[in-house]
Length: 155
Image (cartoon, rainbow, N blue to C red; front, side):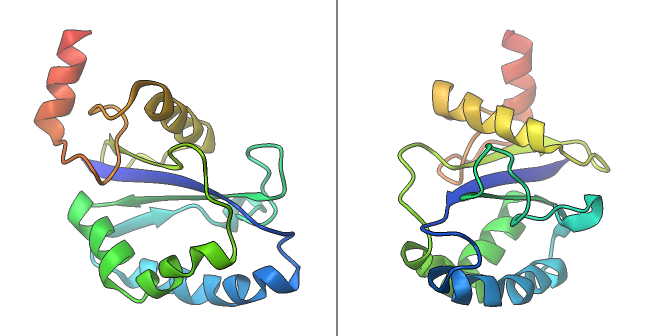
């Protein structure tokens, strides 16, 4: 099993504005860092002719999306909080509004599966409505495959 992650952010201004310029200037570098990180499997990019700047997954040009797949929680956590990514993450208030609800979700997927944007949106909505479960969770929870199996067995 792998771990999928989906997150959204609401930009303070249009992507081509001076406010967003330094964020945009760092995207390729930070994505390249992810691509080379231990445990990285896949990330949503512009293979379909869209990217986080042109995609309007939430019918707003200000809502940016990010989705990736990792071997495990530790790999993703290390990339987010223990690599050069953390320096950009610490600056998020310069570019993005504070989100009123949970804006990031994690879930388990089978090896080789690639999540869809709709799946990411559905998992995030589930987390916002139901809280942390093995079906949809955040870094606050340390669910594992056995927890997911038990969760499905209850249904």
